[in-house]
Amino acid sequence: MELHIWGQRQEVMMKNRKVVSAFFQVYENDCLRDYLEYMAQKGWKLSSVGSIFLHFEACKPHRIRYCVEIMEKPSAYASNQTKERKTYREFCEDAGWDYVGSTGYLHIFCTEDKEVVLVETDSAERYERICRAFMSSNWLFGVLFGIILLQNLYSCYLRKTFFCLNGWTCFLLITVFGWNIGGFYLWKKQAEKSLKESGNLPCISWNFVQLKNNLAIIFTFLLCTVPFVYSIRQSKSILIIYGVMLTYTVLLAVVFTKLLYWLREKQAFRTSTNIVIYWGIGIMIAMFSCIVTVIAIIAVWG
Image (tube, rainbow, N blue to C red):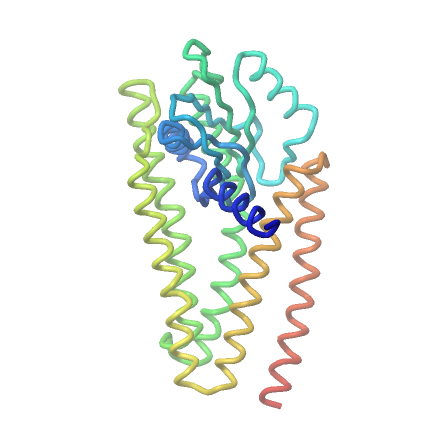
């Protein structure tokens, strides 16, 4: 009887909650706002924000206004628990906006009051913050992409062919980085034109963002499938190494995403301290990975 009641409670909890992935670029903040307002009208209110997912709880369908803003001096490593950030949230709450949470650079507020004024009304200032946030979050990854790209290009040069696993990696890196940078500069060009003509920033539709994310999922699937097929055709040893590397890469992505979320949302360290912790751990893991890789290669081919 107790198990039956517990099962019913779990079923009700699942029906009253929903988890959605939060893949939004910093320049898609207005799109995220529109999506959250759409969900509220469908009976789902944003309850909390995680490192990767948005958490909703069931509510009576009604209109909730959302505001998605970027803090001043945006940094990928800045803590949201510092005195400055808390003061900003208190200012917004005094103005009538309730703080819900943040995902990356995007800070989310909501209100049911139709008369409350927006937190940031200067479109030109919002444009500058978005550009600074995007560059802050991408320049270092651009450097890392460049290093990995050069390593794989050199491997292709030694093999005297691009039709290999390293060549596929080069294609992947160029495509992913080009997709990311190209999307931003396309928005940037539209934003500059819109600011001159109307004084407002363009709002990307949710349907477009959803299509873009679906294409990214398909591309990721191809990314994993092509090397897998290549490995099968080569040898069992290469297949095993590829499987280990793929699993290891996924685990690293999860660990570093959670680490950055912990530093930004749970701690109040200075930005410089967060950078040292984040990349210090990253360097140690990279050195450990190199040692393990060398040992694995010697064990398989030695």
